[in-house]
Length: 422
Image 1 (tube, rainbow, N blue to C red):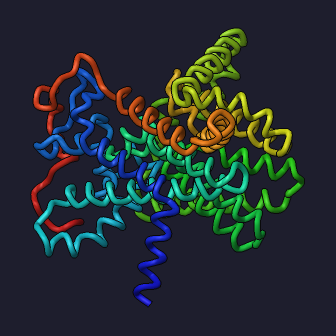
Image 2: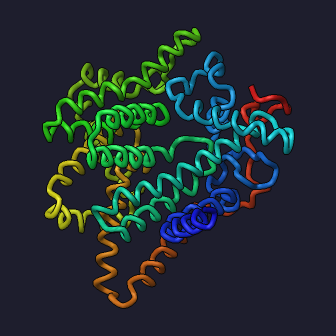
C-alpha cells in the first residue's frame, strides 16, 4: 500500500513538474524580492531583520492584522470589513498551526499569522495552477494547458504577491477557480454541485470583490437558456454575503465598505455618472476604455498578441467560446470602470485564463510548425526567457541594496509580544 501511494505521488509530480517547477521558481524569487529593489525610494517593512519576505505594500499590515485579530479587529479598523474571506481563512489555518508552532517555539500571533498567510498563498498557487491546466486541457490540449499555467504562475505579479500579505493575485486566481467549478458542473450537472459551486463563488467574492467572470458565467447561462440554473446559482452566490452581514449584526459590528464609502466605487460612482453632465460622463467612459486597453497591454504583453492571432482560428472550432470571451472582457471592463481605476495592469487580469490559455495554444502551434523536431527544447528556451524577463522587470533602478532601502515605521500590525494566539 505504501509503495503504491509513493508510486502514485511520483507519477503526480512527474506529470505536473512544469507547474510545480513554476511555483518553486517564484517562491525563490518572491521570498528574496528585497534584492530586486522592486519599489525604489518606497518605504519597506523590514520584518524579519534579514531580507526575507519584506513587505513593499504597506496595506499588508492591515491585511495581516485583519486575519490575526479576526473578527474583533473590525470594531476599531473596519477597512477590510467588506472582505472577510481571507481573514477568516487565514485565522482558521493559524489556529490549526498554533499547537505545533508553540511546541517548537514561542511565537507571537502575528508571526503565526504570517506563516499561515504564506502557506495559504502557496496552496492557492499550486492548486490554482493545477486547476487551470486541467480546465484548459480539453480545449487547448494538455501541453498548452500546462504551459499556460506555468506562464501565469511565473508572471511578475505572482512573483511579487506570493509572499505579500494581500489579495491582489486573487484577481486572476479566483476566476481560475470559478471556471474550473462551473466547467466541472457542465460535465455532470447536479443540483447539489450547482449550489455548492455557487456558494463557493460567493465566498471568493468576499476574498476579492471581482465579479466580472462570475457575471459572465451567469450571462452565458442565460444566453444558452439555462434560466433556472442561472437564477439558482445567483441566489446561492449571494448567501455568503448575507451570512456575513447577519454575523456582523449578531456581533454588533457595523458593516463598512471602504470601496463604496471612501472611494465611491461601484453603485455610488454609477449614480454619480447619471446625475452629472452627459459630456463629462462620456469622456470618463472613453478614458476608462483607453486605460483598460493599456492595462491589457501591460499585463499580457506578448500573450495578448498571440491571443489575438489565434483566437479567431480557435473560434471557428468553438463558436460558443467567442460569446464567452466577449462577456468576460466586457464585464471586466465594466468592473474596471466602476472601480474608478487608471491603467492598473492587474485590473485586466480577470480573464488571464483565456489569454494565457489561447495564447499558449497559439505559441505551441507556432513552435511545433517552426521547429517540428525540437519543439520541446524551443518551448523550454522560451520558458527561460519568460521567467528571466519577468524577474528582470522587478528590478528597480538605480539599484539599492536591501540594507540601504528606506524603512517604514514599524507598525503594531506586524509585531506583538509573544502570547497566545487570540
